[in-house]
Image (cartoon, rainbow, N blue to C red; front, side, top):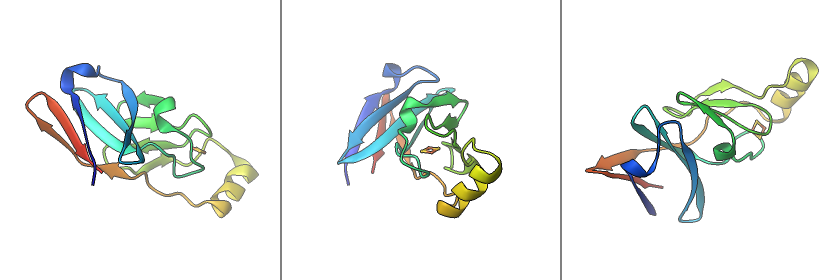
Length: 114
Ligand code: FES
């Protein structure tokens, strides 16, 4: 188990950053003063989620537009494909949630263990 810390004041609301924690790629985000952490690898085909966009707690993958809620990892949308591409895509790779990690705030420090 590896630990990562960041000072709460080092990140702005709406900011995402990638961190390598013990060899795992992790996304850390701040939304409305709350901190979230999740695997930085899209469960679809491996897009780096920290390179995507963040709206509230919803992160959008930069590759094919899958959307996940950082608060619980649930799939909000599985790719931005439609029609036969969506059906084929679901056959090849069924929707699966994003792995999230617990975040602890101790004073002015954000800590997470993965
Ligand atoms: S790799 Fe993320 S949506 Fe395809």
